[in-house]
Length: 630
Ligand SMILES: Nc1ncnc2c1ncn2[C@@H]1O[C@H](COP(=O)(O)OP(=O)(O)OP(=O)(O)O)[C@@H](O)[C@H]1O
Image 1 (spheres, rainbow, N blue to C red):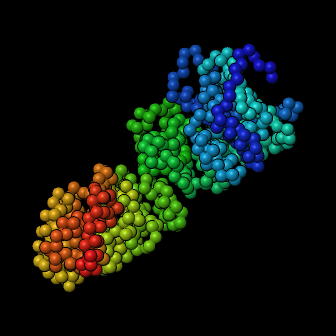
Image 2 (image 1 turned 180 degrees about the vertical axis):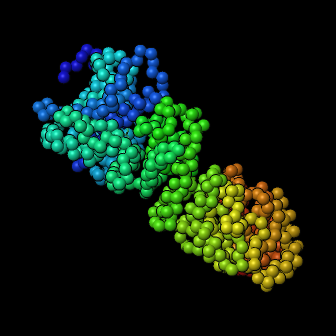
Image 3 (image 1 turned 60 degrees about the horizontal axis):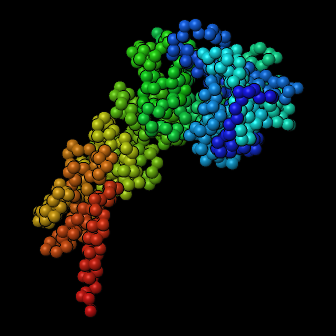
């Protein structure tokens, strides 16, 4: 093709060249996906046009672009080309440079890093990282894209062309109709694609769910179903249909864990098609980053939900909500005050929680997979959604001392069902991680008595148990690291007597330790919580567990940490016998600091701790070996 005078040539960036090379040489075994990617872009462009029209008033004198949306796939045997054309939003010169010319988007580097070398898997990654357009070069030796953005004059058309080797050319062209046309000049040996039957079958295989009609020149009837998948009756849809629609919607290359598809009729009319992904997206914990559920109104895409349709704690859901009751020009503000939306919101929440309960009851393995990915998000519902708190509580899963694994597979119902006779509380321990919780000294006596303790290691846990979830089935939730140890009816009489005796035997030592730890420990007292450790840190009263405080303040301890010592520990007994030991202050600090370390929290002055510990070890070694012969 002869270049016009206004044509300019640009070089691809290094990364773009790498991707193009990859397309041409490494993804060939799955080459048909080029059509899926280009059709998907065309479909997005049509959605974006509708969206823009819905959200902006039509400017006076605007072009009449009211032709029905469509995607056309044609081929020319003689020229050796396949053409994909859409009447979507189109691109300006700037858009083309930004979107097609350079691969400057952050996803690109990640894409290159994520490649596995497995062609099937890698080709699935193309869509995920937004490099779909370049898949054209799997089959084309040259690609010519012509486009004009909706709203711009015909003279503002643009043509981009490249052989994918290192450079591309941009030129201004006249283009009467808005939208984008992509011509693929096929490589030698790709003639088998120039066949109606072949193209038709690729379209049906990969793009059946695309909601706009895809037509071929020879036949004006759409090649695909061309209806919104969610609007079709469930009985007509296979698992495969749902999965490929999910992939189209999300670019996820794993199948969803479960889906929910319901059409609700009555006072309000709407359809829900919601998917639970099988893996958490990378931005699950990024505040405000929601690309979950799309709102359609009578099949027209309107906007991405940002919290009006589904609560934040269900932000892992993907899918579509299609309402028949809202106006097409709806705004986020209107959504907020809408009764129809309030109804959809509450019914969607109910249905999703029911689906999760069914999974938990009937497919525990799937539920465990769900919980591992999204449990931390769902837990927020305990605090955020009081009306559904009970249902969400039933869905909670915890790690517990009952098993040695860190699998979070214990429900509160399970826990209560196997509580020991005489046990009237649900015990838990908060720690920076389940691993730190599992080895915590606070559990010693509970383990010895065979009392199960739930191990809470997620940031959200502290807030859940310190506020909204105080009790379950009339049983109070009690931290094993808060307040004096409380075994309810499970404390035995002999222990109580021993504790009373110890209190008087140890009164003087406690007073001394407290004096040495002034400013550090709020109190020093004896405990029956420990069996093998000499000491632990606890907190009293209303203050939340210290791991929460630690996370909030970044320090390590509560305002009023209490050092508890174990009168049955040989070290503590020894300190009690030798209270005049000049090393007592060092012992006090070492006991305190090691108890802090055992909680998983940092200590203020690690070097001082090490020095003190070494001094004590040396003095013990000297005691054991007798006087130095020199
Ligand atoms: N037919 C089209 N009409 C309008 N814009 C398009 C078209 N095809 C591509 N684009 C623009 O080029 C960009 C890059 O497309 P590409 O397929 O490489 O990635 P993507 O579409 O952003 O990501 P993904 O493939 O994950 O959907 C698109 O985001 C879009 O802005």
